[in-house]
Amino acid sequence: MQRMVIATFMIALAITGLSPAMAAGAESAAPPSISVDAEGKVTAIPDMATLTLEVETQAAAAKAAAQANSRQTDGLLQAVKKALGPPDKVRTLGYSLMPVYSPKDKSAPPEIKAYRALNRLEVKVLEVSRLGEVIDTALQNGATRINGPFWGHSRLEELQRQAAVNALERARSLAEALAQAAGLKIKGVDKISTGIRFIPFRASREPFLMAKAAAPTPIEAGEEEITAHLQVVFQVGP
Image 1 (tube, one colour):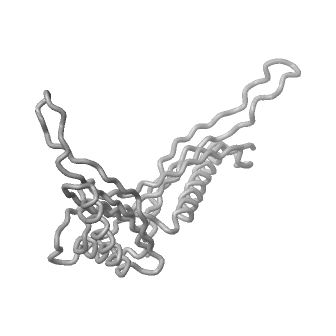
Image 2 (cartoon, rainbow, N blue to C red):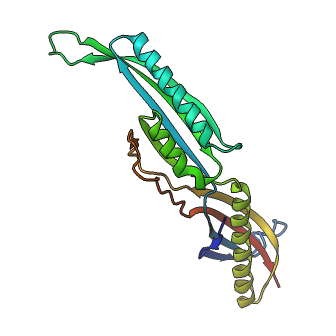
Image 3 (cartoon, rainbow, N blue to C red):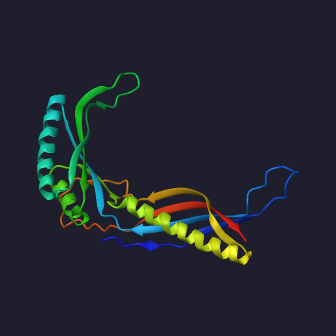
């Protein structure tokens, strides 16, 4: 399901050399070295997704709003769980019950006109091919808002290692070429500094609104980038 693409590396190179001794008995300067600043990129198709579902109800009394929300959320949970696979997960993110005020002029305090209950759920889908079905099920069974999908990778650590190793291989290859051009050889690695970045695709901030889906919701998981940045100092010598 994953497809790897190794992107072009951006390389910044610097060569440093020996400095003469400051005085008799003084310590020698650092040996010659080649410093390579390399950035590598691995792309992969997500195999996980997360949705946030919201159930919002409103009534004149707080108890009525809470009871309506409880019934609607329970129906949503039962329907969504049937659409999920065994490894998928659903959990409550938060619940709130708050007054809704009527707008008044500035001379009078606002008055409570109703109460609003809001229940937020998180659904993790580990098989993205079912994502459209889960969204449609939620829309048809009480979800008033759906946000997502937010993509993920079950093999993220492995992808990060691949990006870092590929960056190091590229850095060493270029350092060897520079050393050869300068009449030197790579003697070892003095220092490696790493930085790994995961750049996930985020869905639009606009939520799906409550609606009866006329057709299945199409979902396409595009490629995402996992980037490794290395700063490597290679020791060189004759």
